[in-house]
Image: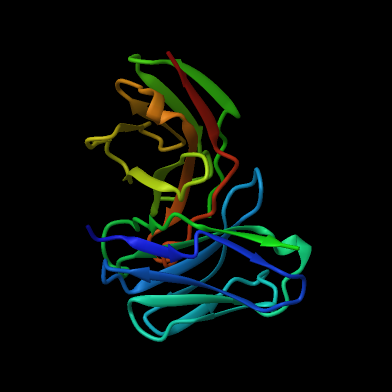
Length: 115
Length: 111
């Protein structure tokens, strides 16, 4: 089945140690998103890619970066994780604009713990 | 983007219909209404969306009022697996599909 895959499902890192989360998709969608969801809160968009065009949300900290080497893969890099970055990180995809409405398909998420 | 207002929580008996309200009084003419749900510790799951007309799919029905200021998501026969947080979101068609999640409604389906 076509899907959005996130690895790993659980990631533990140390304070200040760079960490990379990965997302892959078999849907061939050209828009990919990264969301952060802290405990008991709603998901919050960090940034998205339309093909290779990167779009950062205004309030996304510089500590968060992203790479999209090809259509299928997208990475979230946290350069110096702080305790406040502990959260579930969700990857999502959608098909390009021009269709009626946007439907986003989410992966299962990666839960990041910062020690 | 327009904001939405949903009840914090709802209980529903298994096998009964669950009617989830959402207010979006500032919605503009080109904004869609989307419903997603998130089962505990999973990623959000798309349910349904609509612009003006009522919509139905295999999961649910979406009823949008004529003035588009509110909508209702209907789960026709709730099961225990429908226990989740349900998010009502309004979004522009030209904003790259950006979803601004609100607090949502925690729905608990009980036997």
